Length: 318
Image 1 (cartoon, rainbow, N blue to C red):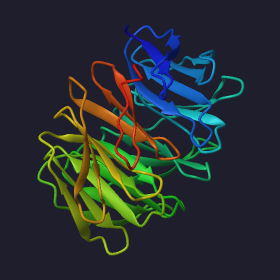
Image 2: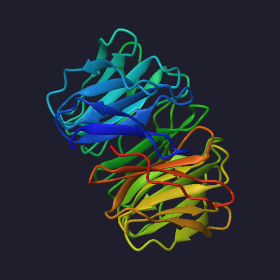
Image 3: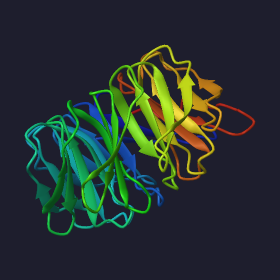
């Protein structure tokens, strides 16, 4: 059903509960890792809802955006949720009392990506206005505007020690920025089409990029050199992420598959099949033993990944 989420037991395949309440497509979903006891859902109905992962109870409905919510994130401390919207603003919400803490205004087009740093005092927002803004979480004040991309921003992320920011853009490049000064450190090139997603590994030593050209790349964050090319998908790659251990990369593609890769060799280790439509989202859980993948029809499958390559699923629909 439109606007519902189901939670399933990954071991038995048994449906545990349904999260119902949104009045339109649920476009963004996040767990409050590393705790994992709460789920946030962002919808085209302009609201964000906070749920108990254990009971399915809705704690809060966050209202205030005047257009669709397209991205959201918990801070690492699990005290705030950030939502980004087509209304060109981002909002920070208090998880405890459900109140809006601050509104971040200044972009001239929709906010498509946002990310807290690990200490929780900074947040970045990426927009279709070609810029990324760095904000003070406590005051809502804009500290820096990262200007350099020549097209829409697709993705933005801090590294673990909060010293660097990586951004991906429809201009086919990925840029590396000093998070403290807001100055550009490097431009990573090589893709033949739009860069759709970028991420650091958990140590901040490597950067992974995925592109509409059907390939993904791994760069050394220090030397800025490409150290691996991940080739094999038959369509654009909309999402890429490292597992927490840094030993695997997961990609999601419009070719209806997700793939697991060795980031050192660029070799494809496993193809996760089962979706009947293009996959736009994928994530590892905190332990790195469960993979979640989602497609545009709104179905989200949970796949268990073990070294023995047992794949169980689908278990999650959203």
